[in-house]
Length: 230
Length: 222
Image 1: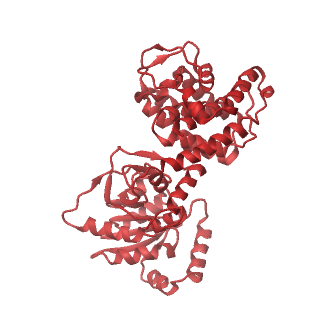
Image 2: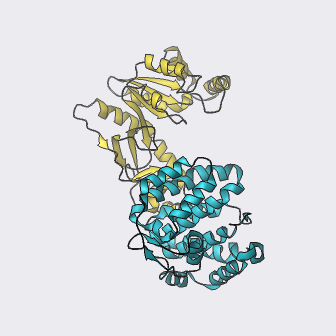
Image 3: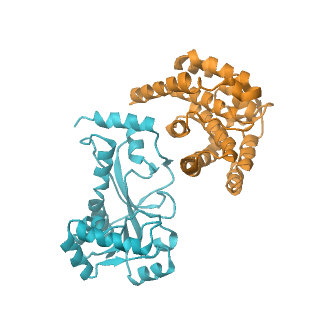
């Protein structure tokens, strides 16, 4: 299985790369995507700066010279980028970039692009879903699903699991904890996709779309998390 | 959890009624000065429990699609003061083409304002089950497109009337439906709109109406 990690920076993709390597028969690649509103050259300079200033330089260089890292200077739905993506023959994309994918980009991957959403689908779509789950007394969790052009509406769920955040003491800490689980959840999703008896769960239309939460309700959530007993 | 939410809403209710609404000078509202003055007076001393009790008779989900002779804006004004609307049964308009109409209205806030005001000549209808698609559309437009615009450049005059009408309708939904998202859209806009903001134009009083209905929605959840 050929997996492309769509990321805006090389260091951000390294953990996912390591986890994907653990999956039997998986060949991961890191696809460095341009940041929205940033010129190609500025993007390249930032990548170079990160390469020399951040940790893991030796490993990054090894991956670059091993042709595991590909730099895309044009936006992901640009015809040239799409052509390059198709030539790579990737089975699955792993979302780690701050971009919104359009249909042609999604279809450049045989199965599609996986997203580790920090909410339980189909119940919680949209923004601040961890906070919304907490304030409504529901379980917090992560859902890895294949995206479509809508907001968390892709129908194929690969993995959905409750995650305990009771050791966290703030919204920020809890969200970071969930975001940091992305590599592990990607690995498990890839393993599931490779298993013979795997079946998708359905992300139907039964849930609600949530929006940015007010400071008032965020204050309530903050109090709840602060007072968790573990 | 319920208690924590209730406590937070009580604090917001106090701030809204004793600070935000009271800072609005009635004389700035021209012909609507008496309305603004009356609303301020009603909300200044009332407790959330009193407001909740007071709202019961006027704010309710109708059994079926209804009409009022007054029209949307006078009805919203009446509901903010908790005056009962004179309701009469009416034929249900088809919901799907309406959302399509709203979507197709493009960059014309005045057209959407007109469409919403016509459909919700009785604002209580927004809480009916059949209006789910429209409610979701209005909530989405408030929290995505409008929010982005307001955060970027404030409320431009042509947008103010539409925004305040949508917030007033969402207040009715928030007071009547067990869905925290509607109430939180109101919370969000309360935090987003500058306290001293006073829209110009004939519907400036809609801001006061939104505040009055927001107070009733908060009371319903306390």
